[in-house]
Length: 168
Image (cartoon, rainbow, N blue to C red; front, side, top):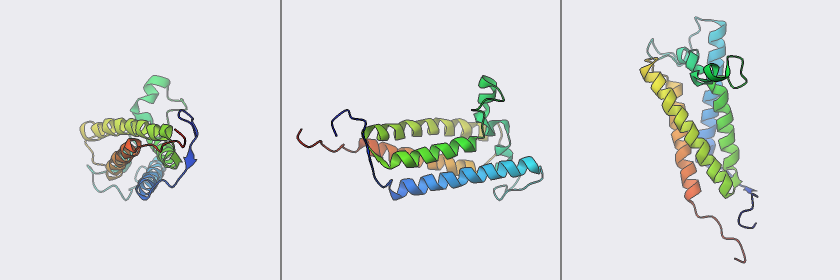
């Protein structure tokens, strides 16, 4: 491969990235389940609903649980992008896992960039969680921690020296 080539080869993503992505995907799917169950039954109580101030189902069902509470106001309620935040989580963790399986500078840079976007989203949603909803969502906070972990892994990856090309 020559410098500047966009080619990449496959590799194992590493145990830490695999565990974090799997954990994030499971939590995102659980959040989808809780949101759907709560939509069917307002009295539904999820495992993560510990009390009135510790309720993930209340958070997932809030206006900020869909499109980050922003998409509806910018693109409209019927926009394709006005999805449950958990859908974005599923996409993000899948993307992180797939990019983590690619060996190439561009993949490492995309890992960092997508992790930075997820960190910005996590900070925004944490602020909403604590200062607007006055809630403590165990699932949410765990996904924020997973996002920080993926950012750390991504920064380590991008800082690794790239293999030298033979003959140069």
